[in-house]
Amino acid sequence: MWGHARQGEILNSAGTLFVVATPIGNLGDITLRAIDVLKSVDIIAAEGVNRTRALCRHYGIKTVVKRFDQHNQRRRVPEILGLLRSGSSAALVSNAGTPGISDPGAFLVSKALAEGIKVTPVPGPSAVTAALSVSGTGAERFVFLGFPPAKKGQRIKEFQRWSTAEIPIVIYEAPHRIMNTLIDIREAFSDPDLVLFRELTKIHEEVKRGKASEIIASLAQENIKGEFVLVVEPGGGSIEKCLEEDALVKLEEMVAEGAKSLKDIAREISTQTGIPFRRIYKISLKIKRNRPEAV
Image (cartoon, rainbow, N blue to C red):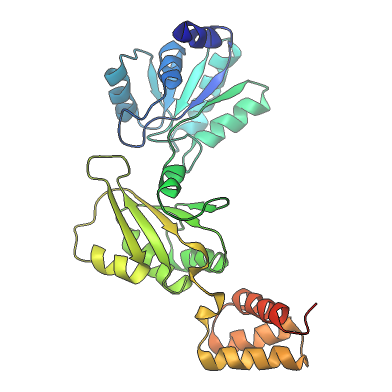
């Protein structure tokens, strides 16, 4: 039987750390294998004890749950590794989704691997892939930034780094910072199209699509609550969008003249406009490639 086969997998894998994906909202979004693993391991290391115990009650899982989060991970890791070395099995779960994605799970995994302990994934829900799958944006490749820096200057710098990327950008954000983050996205990405997901798979799930400025205006009328995932569409349109017409014309003329290197041209235009050097340099490269004489 399928159930016995899964049970046997665990019994024959003594000393294994199972990295188990759990629902991001709807409790029905869990795999049969994940339930079986959580029932069969000796201990569950959970980012949020109350949340994980609620999941366990729902599925009749009676395994001991121990708190494992960013505040106690360095103290808890030796304890868990000791159990694994002795032949016990453990499951690592986060509050929601796949452990190790913007949570402390990666620390335990790295320590277990360093000791030669077997680490096995039990795949399932992830807010990143859930959001991308219904964003309407091609996702053959994407960039996941997780939670952006809390400080505005660092956040803007990080966004500018990816502002001309031609692939989707996925971002997590908390309710108390979502407006500031959207404002910085509008600035750094030149008011891109994006999709905002709130409370994915939960009762109050909501999706907003539009320009960053439109979504900012919409949220400004609300009492902001919930957890957010943002998918910023590739490139924010043309990478030349960040330049005023006069500056773009001057840049094209300087590239055509060829009297200066592209780096020198980019530095000069960057100094004049305040737009980051990297963005100007990338536009310069595009202009040069598109010139008729370019090979």
